[in-house]
Length: 383
Image (cartoon, rainbow, N blue to C red; front, side, top):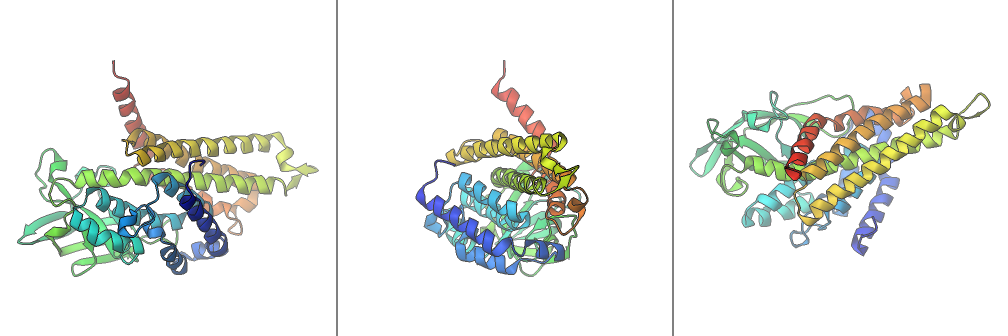
């Protein structure tokens, strides 16, 4: 990115050094143990990364989404799980920043920026993922509070986090359904329990959990925006950033898969020559490189739309779709290029292969992205 200012360049340089010194040496061990990276998180707090996109007036770094996307790409090249710890938290922060009341912004954004309060986004339920309007978690007004009952699942930072942007229904009978939805800033407390940690194929280290709310009481002043009926709009505001983030993760994973394949192809020999000299391998490397560059350009375009404050579902959908598919394809090709070693836990390729599939599911499946793109395409070119 050629338009970075001096602060952004310094932040990116700092992140690169941090990753080289503190993430790469331990990533494989922690990932195989499915161990939460407490020391890495502590260092990210010291660096101010939990306030990356939070305005400086609230103690954040005030970075543009495009610079933040570059940070996520760099992190995902080393260990994708670390990017999730950061992003889920910052989606919550973005929602409060864009949709919250002045009092909510002043109270919570400084705590989010320092990492004193860390958490994420609580949307998904056991019977509801893509169709957010089908959620069953209900909030009932009781004086100056709301009482919440329901279950959320696949919530990133669910165990280690302490605060969540919680999507609920305040009027389950409302039509259209989104008129009966709201979102709360929900801190852990009585009635808010973590029922279990969810085991996963990949994306290990970060805690994914099921959260249960049983007569959980939350003050009415934690209703984001101060009025009911804005829950879906809050979720969409957060997911705009989330989709650019997931696209950036895809770029990072695809780039690391390419780097590993390029390196190995110059070390491994078959039939008397390095394998990159075999046409079959050379063609794979070329396609992998094209996918990385195309994915990065699409992600940058979507991120710059967020920088400008433009509607970005079209650009973000394209970036998320292409970059995450690139991560899946490149991780598989890297495994094939490595042969048997690619299937071994001694090499990073098998981790990339396990991490990549999550990206085509999370933050809206790629099938949904195609529908969003097609709908916007017709809207932009109606006759």
